[in-house]
Length: 363
Figure 1 (spheres, rainbow, N blue to C red):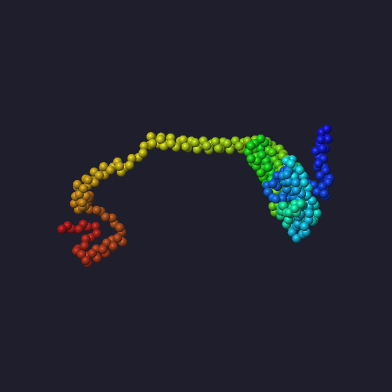
Figure 2: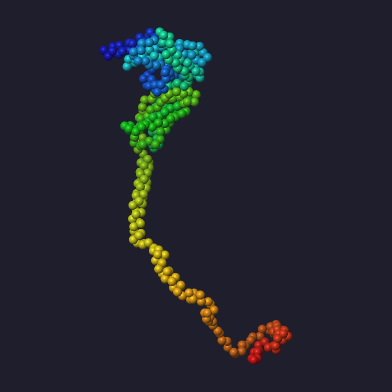
């Protein structure tokens, strides 16, 4: 019975695939439609491999019109793409065009003009201009793995790029968050690589990790694609990391303790210092009366200060020498010759000379 109900639900889709002109049906996921809705284009177009192109738009359920879809590359001729209309869960319709994979339908680096005509009135209802190389919506990478390589607070994440010809022109975004955490997840963007290292993780925690893809923006561009399925990895506790965290905590506690003691101790130190070492008095205030009295005394006795040195008696020491003759020593013939010459020259200019060693006569 369950199998019969399953076939009944798939019957409309099989009929649509069977009787669609050219079997041009393509399935567009709700996630892809939501990612393209952020661009808010009149007609949403995207390419999964840059070798294909899909354009679509949605209409409410009450719209009962039929359309024709035309496209023209710059300098080329006008061509028509067969539209496929698929019903939504909410009752609306999604009209889609899947460009055929040939050199006429898919061209890179050439402007593409799209025009949608209403069949009955033949009026243009929608238009769009784009470049195929700027509307990439690439599938997520496969085989995403995350493992701990023995390095503290670090995980190694690896993946396999999507199987497209332009895999070397893709960028990746790695999203990770702690299990059961309400904090916002963290992201790492990776270019020109299929692996990355997530650092500064918390030990003993489990992390959920997933990856998505986007053209790197150099030659090809587009939108961030869907996320890959989540993988789970755990960071074990390490003795070294625990010691490192403990040292950081101790340093922070010591710093806070020193700051607290400084804030509390400074007022106490100032109070004790005032009690043990009282402030030094101001000499000007203390000696102000003494200096004033001294100045008054100097004004009363002006003659004391004007007394000169001549009015002050001077004293000196007088040494009395003995009258006993002083015995002289003989200094040899040279000294006697000099003495005789000195007596001779003295007799020429003065009174009677006195021989060397004799006492002069007193008057």
